[in-house]
Image (cartoon, rainbow, N blue to C red):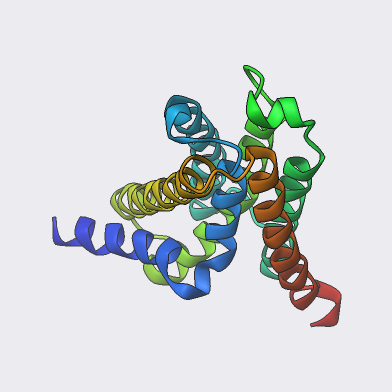
Length: 196
């Protein structure tokens, strides 16, 4: 049980430490268009991301998939750029009332595949390629717990701006998405693999 707690904690730290700003920004960009009342939609959204990153986390940790780290580190902020841009181009009525299955769910699933490759590199560097079942499960659950903390924080911040301060929802989504876009573009520029 000690190993489980160790890898669970590492999974939490992988998301909630200041160096994990890319993962925090991605989850934030995914959730910006939702409010507390939309919590079921957010659970489906985060589950889509979880499915994506769980697949590549397992495949990469088991040595079945390999992708150069410098490209993964570049593609992660590009997933944030794409998600923030999607938020910015949404029509106002789509922001206020997201459709039943908006494209952001497919973004979450597909981009989860990319993020899973980065998670796998962290896990393999800690465990090696030996018995990965328990560390993989614990690390993944830690990541999920941390992501739920980020989701809850974003929903609370959205509640404050949209429902207490009464900023129009479309302005909130676009303003916050623009900030996320700027941060992720800088991150992508800094990580451009051909500069390394």
